[in-house]
Image 1 (spheres, rainbow, N blue to C red):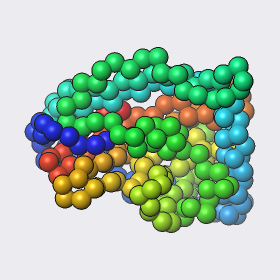
Image 2 (image 1 turned 60 degrees about the vertical axis):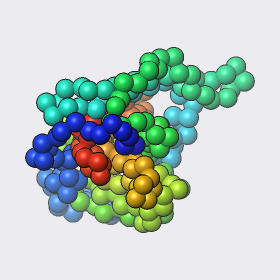
Image 3 (image 1 turned 90 degrees about the horizontal axis):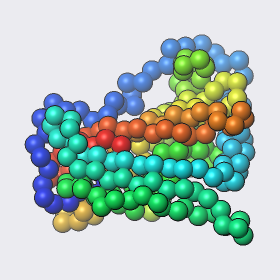
Image 4 (image 1 turned 90 degrees about the vertical axis):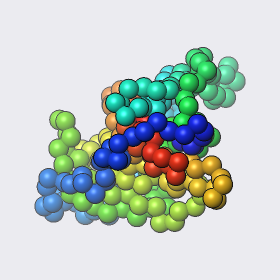
Length: 237
């Protein structure tokens, strides 16, 4: 989210950012039934298969971003709904059918925000992308009716030219696919003392098995306070 004038409404100093990743802990740290490196290779292969399948899906995507006042009431909104479809020739494209004039006052939607909505928030960890990250196994944790392996995901190199994910992933211990993601897109961007800040919230993405085979990202939410130099701005996505 890019900061802009006019300045933010007052936000009490006690309003925190989203729950720190470090506060999420596994409930079972006993040895895994198969070696951790094999778990990583299995789920990366499965995610690679899923990405290829998802590229052939059509779906509808709806986005709502709200800036909040200190009583957590919406003070401005950005909305956009689109269909990801194919032309008769098989070319994939996004068709926006609803995008009213934004009423955001303290932030604006940046190109990086739109890229993150498409690529980082529905995070997919393929075999090809494994070398970009360090994966630390933390343990197992119940997740609804599932049991999941919990991993911390950290980019090996932060590059302002490339958007990456940093946070936690939950991998189903039967299907070896990501079923939940919690973290943020990195890096935050600060274009010099007089430049525009571009900060990004912690988010949580849930997947569902919508086709009986693959776990597809179906819902992302975020409520975070972005610490702009002009003052904090609380947002909800």
